[in-house]
Length: 150
Image (tube, rainbow, N blue to C red; front, side, top):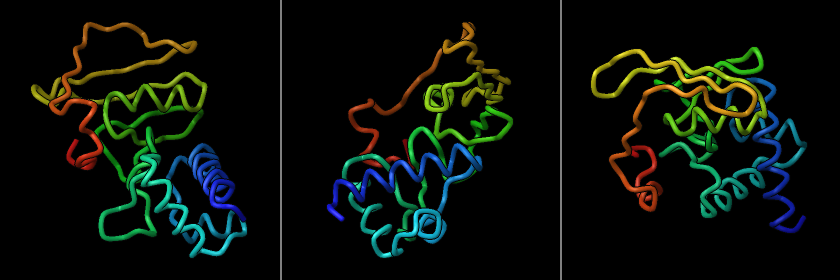
């Protein structure tokens, strides 16, 4: 299978798995799901990482840390959508989950500075406006320099 086709198949399978289950698959689960050898899945993970489409778990290339906007680990940005709970990597990605799933969503988060409870809502494809301000310490152009920190 040509690399482009393989990577597209893997990427689409990752997002379908996440949408169905509320969690990010590992290489073994994805291998079974799409009937593809696990070594091909791992090669696809490498290529997708190089294209900034996913981030493998540091030290464990069989696990996905981030398939933006979804997090492979629990975070401070749980998102409820379609009757499931997902985790966003940051406040920006909390909105991105609703966009990716084409649905209403709600995220119960906390202000990183004051710990004040924040409720982020997306209804009918738009955020419900609140008087919140998001501050990103690292400029977007440098997020992939150290995506786990960012």
